[in-house]
Image (cartoon, rainbow, N blue to C red; front, side, top):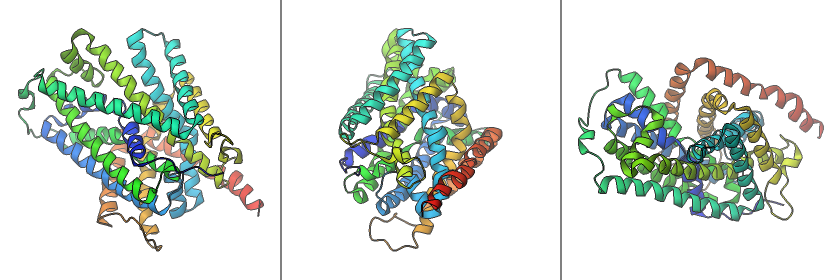
Length: 434
């Protein structure tokens, strides 16, 4: 039994937009604005990182067209560099990144819900685990059900952000003087741009996850490149407009912290209930991101099991529902354990460097794969497109390593522990089977 191709273009677009636009847009503009000190540089960073993301997405479009299978980066790394490299990436996803990010999003949702309903710490953890379990169940019950649920949440999320943008600008709640001086050179150019670059990269992170469901997208060789282009363009425009309306509503000098920036804007728009309204918007936004993530992430473990690099049972589909139910369940269980342990912030800070490295390595794999004959979608302006992405990725990696050297290299060390696991367990069992 194989995964069915039942997702169209707009489901793929919803998956990208729904996953990428989470809590980041409510937190990063404040830190970015304070780093760069002027609307001009903030606009430059959003445009540059949008161009970088689009370049990476165009490369992924070709990779997905070449290998339209479930698994995304795992499949592309396997084809370009072999099963060992792909396993280490999948090991990182399975053991730390996917459950850690799932726990992080669910805990963030629960904390904002706790602000609205005054939940205790125990209540917030119970809600986070309940949300993870509920979304996991939806994804197990059927791909069509989860896709329709995701599209509804994404429309609600984007519609809400567009309403805030229009309402904030058209009703004159802010002051255009907040954009002056439009251009100001930062006192510490390197430090300012470094903070802005990393913040923007985090806000765009996750765009590559749609490739994990390539095995279920109709005509992936055409729909995935289109979805990546449309999704990244939409996200970039939304980020620029949302940052602009926040600037318009709240002068940068009055921003108390990253966390309060959106709340301050909400208070200007909606009065004393602004904080609750914005907290509700964040809950909906993160709920959509969780739905997208639990829909795409388990496809990596499914693909690994299909290759014999993970336990066979996780590569089997439910006989009636045709979903990778066991792969979904393992992510739900691991994420719930991490919620209880409260270690999700540490997990993300330790492994962000490694994630960026692997996505860059995946794009670099295109140079090796171009040596094979292929008739289909090709990355525009190759080789300039992947080179542009890889140069900016190298800069991002350097900035992350300089900011958090111990965390970056400790996380990399843990991921490299996957090498002996591969050599002595899965590769050994695979070899003995022949």
